[in-house]
Amino acid sequence: MKIAAASCCKLQHFASQPVWDEIRTEQPDALILLGDNIYLNHDFHSDPKKLAAELRSLYAQQKAEPHFAALLSDMDQRGKPVIAIYDDHDFLGNDRYGGGEDQALCEAARHELVTAFSPLQTGDDVYSRRRLGSPGAEVEVIVLDARFYRRKITDSIFDRDAMLGANQWAWFEQAVAAAKDVPYLLVVSSTTAYSYGLVEDAWERCPAAFKRLCDLLRKRRGALVVSGDIHGNDRYDEAGLVEIVTSGVARRGLVFGKPRANYALFDFGPQSLRVEQRGLKSSDRWTGVLPLNHWQLP
Image (cartoon, rainbow, N blue to C red; front, top):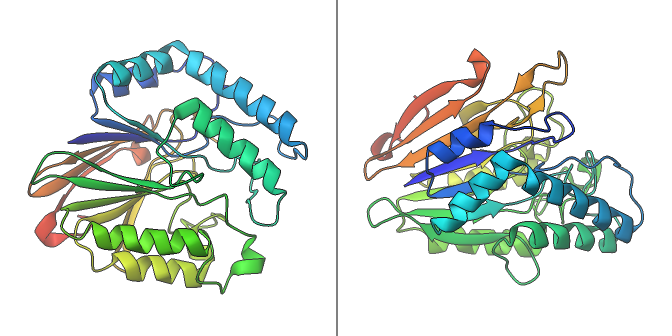
């Protein structure tokens, strides 16, 4: 069972994105798009119709990019799922959350994601769960929506329901419990669990919710978080929580403006998970194996 994951794709930086051909060559059994799949030109929308129109236009442009279109077509022809979620730049704008915002804006952004990628839904929500793979190497993929219900950190730093909201938290805990007999549990979060220095959007910035996440997953062998957002590949393993970050599939670095072509491949086998992070920078490239009987980063 091979899953490819990528995030942070800025058409404004790269009108041509051959990195998607590399992913297509791998013939993944699933493609996870972790958010910032497009970048809004306007971060301060207050009109739901104008927000929806810009999102719709950008999604159409991204899906028309020839390399990306070829990958989507190949996934469709082979009957393999594309699993997509938004982050801030394809939701309401830079560093914006749904909590405290006009709900019509949030619903407009969610609607455009659904229209563009047809993700599995739980009611009207875009958090979901699905089981992939074959017996002995099955993967329960749990996709979280870490934008729609989240409030500003200053308003929720000590709130156990922070990041997801009460209803999604209850659903998440039930989903983890229901997958107790599946070898692997892949939790998809657009924002990182760990803070990786000064990442403001990380779960770790909300200590009560972060502890709740760690408590839920730390004793679950075969569980890991995959996330994006930070414009680089990284990984961390502390507090019993394994996280693989892959970000910057088609965009430039913030400081020096150098190109990024980062993505990750997850090969799930009966005894172990092999992870390969790929990118142009040496610091973005890493390969490791996590045995099920010794579940931690090597």
